[in-house]
Image 1 (cartoon, one colour):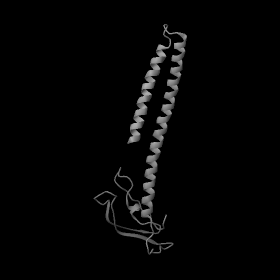
Image 2 (image 1 turned 45 degrees about the vertical axis):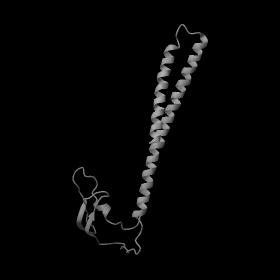
Image 3 (image 1 turned 120 degrees about the vertical axis):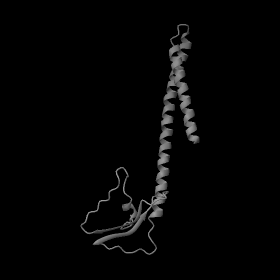
Image 4 (image 1 turned 180 degrees about the vertical axis):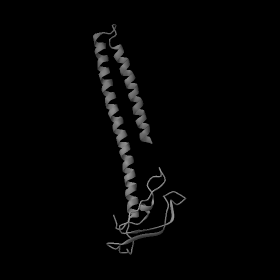
Length: 155
């Protein structure tokens, strides 16, 4: 969260620079100013406006970097989890090349972190040529059963 504190400080500095820029812009045309003072104020306004633009770019860059870091962290977690889940068994069972029946018996599936199973002792048999539609309650998301059955081959 140190990065977030830095971004907030940069944003605060940018707001103060904008306020100072507005102040100097309105006072540059003061009739009591000498030409040299007026020139210095105009130069200061340009410097402040340039700084504001650069700070805006910096804040945008930090934000993009932060979001990308979150994405990369999630991606690394996904890869680690996928590697753990896709290790082949020590003694793999051969899968028929052209099965006539696919059967899952007493399948129970629980989402990670959930105490209750989404599926409990569900059995299904699918014969060649049959179509199976898995339908959940409206708004329930994808049904879990396809993800709970083992893949036919390693990805």
